Image 1 (cartoon, helix red, strand yellow):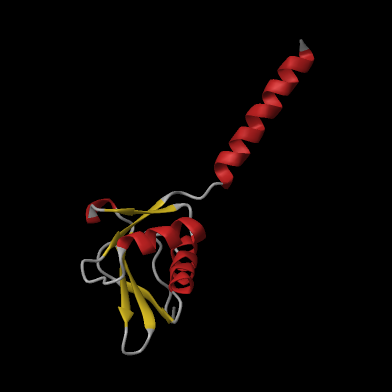
Image 2: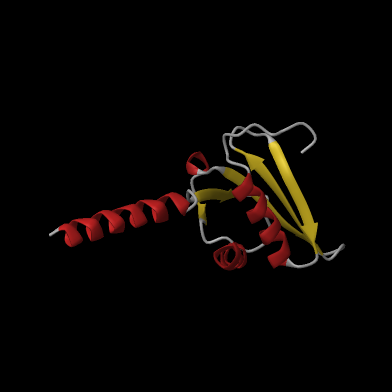
Amino acid sequence: MKKVLLFTVLALLAGVAILQAEPRPLKIFLSPGSNVPRPEVMKNLSDKCPNVSITNDPKKSDFMVEARFAPYRDRYEFTVTRKGGDLVYSTETTLLHNAVKDVCHYINTHTPDKPVAEGE
């Protein structure tokens, strides 16, 4: 009986630890000004950032992302806006997956309600 109780307690503690280790799911709204097709952004997000999803409702999003491809420069330009309208991050790269990776890193290390530090 003691072994069953001990096993149950250990399994419960392991489950709690796993739940605490998972990052909170984040939602982004893809700006209407974006010209990168949504399926391309979604595919790269699922590869690079599985805890982030795209929502069609800007009120339910943590961040808005404008994803633009500038053909004259052959560059992807992504801009991240925090809920409330503050521009907080931008990146430009020649490869789409690198732009998504950069944005993913930013939004996973800066919670939506955390103030942006001076000089960031």
